[in-house]
Amino acid sequence: MTGGRVAGKVALVTGAGAGIGRAVAQRLVAEGARVVLGDIDEKALDAVLDELGPEAAAGRRCDVTDEADVEALVALAVERFGGLDIAVANAGGGGSSELVAHDYAQWRRIVDLCLNGVFLTVKHAGRVMTERGGGSIVNMASLNAVQAGRGMGAYCSAKAGVVALTEVAALEMGRHGVRVNAVAPGLVRTQATGPMWQLPGVVEEYVENAPLGRFAEPEEIASVVLFLASDEAGFVSGSLYGVDGGARTGRYPDLIGAFERMGRE
Ligand SMILES: NC(=O)c1ccc[n+]([C@@H]2O[C@H](COP(=O)([O-])OP(=O)(O)OC[C@H]3O[C@@H](n4cnc5c(N)ncnc54)[C@H](O)[C@@H]3O)[C@@H](O)[C@H]2O)c1
Image 1 (cartoon, protein in one colour):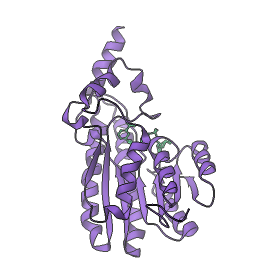
Image 2 (image 1 turned 120 degrees about the vertical axis):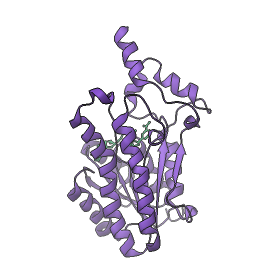
Image 3 (image 1 turned 90 degrees about the horizontal axis):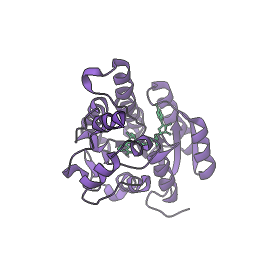
């Protein structure tokens, strides 16, 4: 396609094999971008690449916690499509444990994936964009960056770190024409959150606390990412965009309480 809100741009998306990342990749292509996609799940990644086709999409296995992988994904964008205008540091995931019982290795895995992986993407995408004189980076934070949840210490800490990282990156890269923003989704129905539907009362608690009275689909996050990535957001940098149906105004579901209730049933 020749038209579209990101027509002619080259975009990179991490964690693009499923969920929000896949929806972002699909939306960017629908709006005229060519995309380079990374994921650790090669089968899922191949399915997305097949769907989008070789004219619009290329990809490779990329573990965002491995610096060489991230550097290679950025290089692929430049080699294959001649540049890099948009980077979406989307890959992330969680795990649940109260702090006093938290396994340190699990803590490090969550922080490594959710925060260090975003840092590596910002570093290598930002390096190309600052050299080329412009670009837009969108980092995937979470409602949990600004709203605590019992049992979510590692995830909340890492996602809050993403917000701080986004602000520093915006501050450092702005003079090179690079905008850096973050998105904070509330509850979105994806494979990552599938288990929350099995926990008694958790989704109901989210829905009760969200003024819009529902959870989101991945496409609703993708449309805000698209806006931030596009030139329509040309004066937006260092911002955190909540996409949570207003859930920030309430309280986060009590996952530990739900585990306890499930244990009693
Ligand atoms: N789903 C939600 O409710 C929700 C809410 C707030 C924030 N988020 C954030 O949105 C992002 C995407 O979440 P999702 O729900 O779409 O998850 P998902 O599990 O549906 O998809 C995540 C994708 O990332 C890939 N991935 C996992 N580890 C990776 C790694 N080390 N390197 C590269 N890819 C990796 C997975 O293989 C998968 O394809 C995450 O950062 C998550 O924390 C999700």
